Amino acid sequence: MAANLAPRAGWRAWMLGGVGLLAVLLALYVVAARRDAQLLRADPDAPIADAGLKRAAVAAGRGVFAANCASCHGADGRGGRGVPNLTDHDWLYGTGAVGEIEQTVAYGIRSHDPKGWNLAVMPAYGTIKPSPAHQIDPLSPGDIADVIAFLDRARGQPVSDDGAVQRGQAIYAGRGGCYDCHGGDARGDPAIGAPNLLDHVWLYGDGGDASVFQSIALGRRGVMPGFLGRLSALKLRQVALYVRSLSETPKETP
Image (cartoon, rainbow, N blue to C red; front, side, top):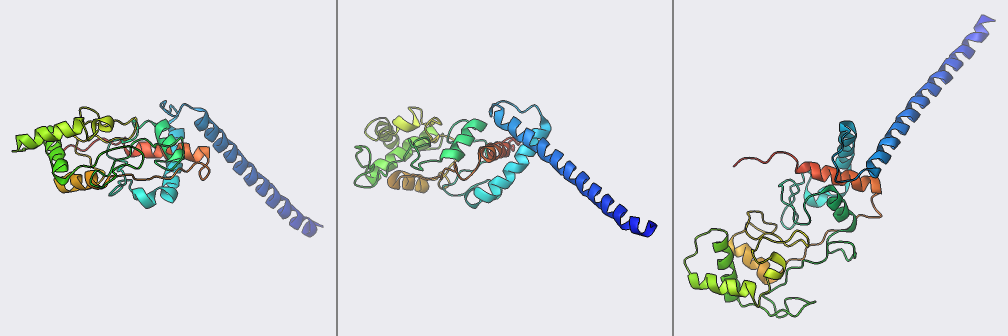
């Protein structure tokens, strides 16, 4: 009789163990679901008081970034030619707020989505028709060189030709229309994605005269796809928090 009961007792123990494990997994799932819901309900730009919630969201966002963003921005987020460095504390589109990053990831840049960033397109001034959408006159190579001389002087670099600086300033503020996007002070406009021309952050090239000449002559209109529909609302929030975390490390002193 005892021999017959032993297998049944073992079976019951196995069943109870399985039920216990299932209960633990279910409890963990409920906790995770509650945290996910809390993350989505929160203001994306408000500090997250729950340190554990923030760590979990950033860790999940790292995986989302690796699967969807690293192919362009690099595994470390430092980007490359024409792809922004996400770790350098400089934001081309917006101010780096989590909500803005989330919107950028969702709708893209020049992705033909009306909710994306579509305003700032650098004309190709060295071509016959610099802009397909606006009436803009082309600039000669000499004109472009003068604009570069003006920008060099504005950045504090030595420029011996005062005449070139003056001509470049007139082109910048006049027929070139550069001020319309980059501002009268050439410090850009993050509300539309126009870069600051006086700092030392360059999306294309090294900021030398040759690379700046190429940007002015050939134009720039980089594209970032929108991920709305490919990423859930939760993953969009997580990857935005992760991207923001990349620039939260202290700046290196020169």
